[in-house]
Image (tube, rainbow, N blue to C red; front, side):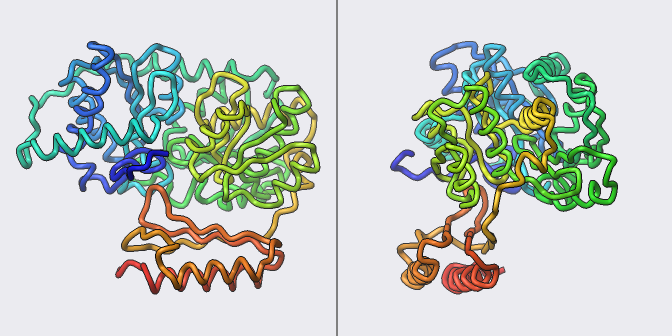
Length: 460
């Protein structure tokens, strides 16, 4: 990670409230200009693919970013509504200089964001993002207030259907097993998955029933999707015998969670476990190593160890998981939240649709249910409390917070974990506690959260 802090880019691109800085019409145009200027340094007529989720604001943000890119000489193609990993695939497979995604993933519809992939399909390194945002600030300083330094008409954005179909076709070819016997219930979160999941599942012959697949610009992630896996689980549980599993995506479908046939939630840790065992058995897990994050449960680490597989922990954020994977040549990594990265094929980022296909393929190949595949995962009680903060002061610089964290660690004495960190995309402190008992877990989490609230809490 770069030593100089970034102000616009977080762990997953630029995020904010649509219509407010840095996501105003002027600033999104200038972000496009800065990115375009960066690209044409090495390719004077750089081709860029841009995609978006289903938020009300995504279209106008995409238009203004495209205007900025075109003003620097970039040739911009739109994939329309498409998943984040879909844009990463298109950038890599079709020879684009970059891919841009307009999405705030799991955030509310009022938020939005801008993510950038390089031409190889990977997210930009922190240092590259820092250089781009320095140019953004320079352009903001020089721009006339309230005016777009460009003509009004948007550039022509050809090829939407063909681009999406290319991604769907690649996904369909990524697994070889016959999935037609599986009956699945799918929650699309009223998000980007609505544009690809039905066509993909139909092409693979999967018996799928879809819910939350009618986006209206404001209902993305609203009580549905991967933020609310219990909603999916309840539907499947109420119809025991009707489905083999449930699948739920987040707003841009770069992550996915599941439930088994009886409605038990299966999170990203469990997916890493079943995938790691399958890849080990097939000889596609070099070094017998899986990369998870500081948020992954101790139970996963123990279950993997019992299977002869080592687990490394990276910082939270799928880009940091990927960086750790690349260092050691790992082919599997991911997050408890459902970002799973498979590097035994062509994928370069977490892809919820690909992960769903891989999980179903393992079920078919082994002849085992989802519950059977993860039945020995003994999860330590874990809670995560979010505290809205007014500023992200390092915890070690606030004595009372540092003391509360140290006290909790001393009490756990190695039989649990304390992870206190700031969200990379929101003004939140996240307090995660694992302990042998729920009483101790909640007490320690409540105490740390209250100390943070008193010291740094936002006044609203």
